[in-house]
Image (cartoon, rainbow, N blue to C red):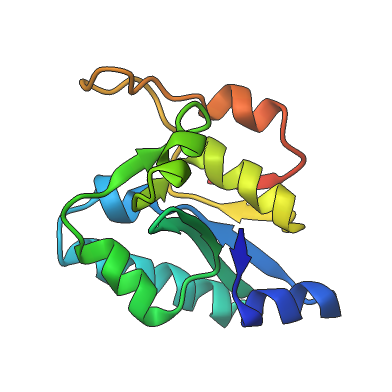
Length: 148
C-alpha cells in the first residue's frame, strides 16, 4: 500500500484526513463528469480544512491519496476493475487498475490510519454477476466514521 506524501504527512501531524472512494469515478459516473466530480470532492474536503485521500488501485498497487495525474488516469482509463473486499487480492496480484468500493475504501482507510470516510452512497445489488455490495457488512466491521 502506497500512501501519498501529503496524506502521510497529515496523518503523522495529526491533521484531518478524509478518505474518498473511487468507484464513483470508475463505475458510477460517465466521463468527463466522473473526473470533474472527483476533483470537486477533493476540493470540498480541502475547503473544510482536511486532506483528501482518494483511494484506488493503480497497476496492482493500492494508492491512498492520488496525485492529480493519477486521479485523471484512473478516471479516463478503459479497463478498470471494481475492487471489493472479495477480489482486492486478485486485482492487486494481477497488476490491474481498479476503483475501490465503499467497503474496500473503508478497510484500506482504516489500515492506513484514516478514521473518516466520505461517500456519495452505500452500495447495493447491481445487474452484473458477482456485484452484490459488501458495503453494509464491511462498514459494520470497520473502525471508520462514514459520512454519506
